[in-house]
Image 1: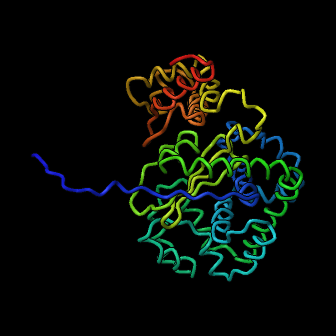
Image 2 (image 1 turned 30 degrees about the horizontal axis):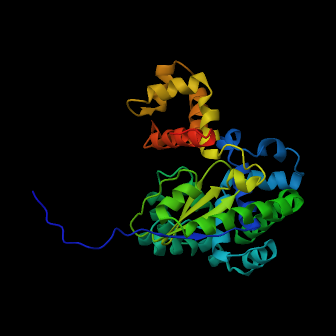
Image 3 (image 1 turned 45 degrees about the horizontal axis):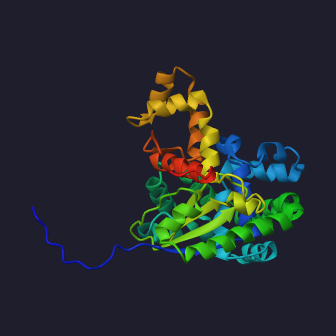
Amino acid sequence: MEVINTNVQKRETYSVMLERSLVWEAVLGIAAATNESLLSTLEEPWESLCSTFDEQLQEALEHVKEYNTWKSLLQITHASQSGNLADWERYVQSLSDIELKEKCLPYIDSHSEEKVKEVAKGSEEALRTVTDLVVDHPFYPSYIRYIAQVNTELLKEHLINVMKCWWQHVIEPDKSRLTQILERDYQTKCKEKEKMHPETFVEWATLGRDYKPEPSVHHVLLIPHVAYRPWNVEADLPDTKVIYYPVSEESMDPDKKDEPKELLLRPLKVLGDATRLKMLRKMATQSKSLKELTEEMQMGKTTIHHHLKLMKAARVVYQEEGSYSINRQVLDKMHAELFEFLNLEN
């Protein structure tokens, strides 16, 4: 059927906001160091560094790992809007029992906000309803039950303790360098934001995250980090998609102007392995599940999964509903970046 389109309205997109602070760096560092499944893919050697921490911090991190309270730290930092640890601590101390639980509980969607508030007030019926809504999420059901049932004074004590200990051991000794890196990246992104369409800017800033507008999402908040490189970490807030993105290599070391860019270097490093190239060949014509790749490659599931994590980190492949596909856009950009770096005509 033919359609006559008289609509002159442009497709709506989102606006982009930028934030940075050492508080975010501390929270994301705690999240990274307690994410056992990704430790081997992170640039920071958190596994070996954590072994040097004192007993108090190690115990606090074990609690974070067991109950996913890094999510509480993220939620509270968004709510507090604190740029330094002292203000952050004062904010946490000022919260009532119900307020603390409300701030720690995750945003699910606009239809569930009232139910989530009821969970914070102790409603068992609301708790059952909300956990049913997120039953397929890898940790939300247990996390929500934990927040609903935890003693708030103990939770406050834990959150403040892990932040102060992490600050003392990780942030304070490296404060000047981290501040300079985050500020360089923030200033660069602020300048470039004015030159690009929001969707193009988000993809550029996040080194390849192609985020299209979604219903009810009107803002994208970008927050740089060193601790979780090379990963983008995402979260949802009312009206807003949050992307905690890895700072660029240029921000890490501005003197390396002649070094190849990350969009080139990371995929090349990952592709310099015969097994991973063979896996990509298997995915060339159609998406493959972990089970299919394991069978076709005749290798162990753990080994295949490790290779897939590395390729996902470099954005050479992406995962969608249990299947893995080649990210052709990244491969195309890698080709262009290589020719640009070598000063060759493409």
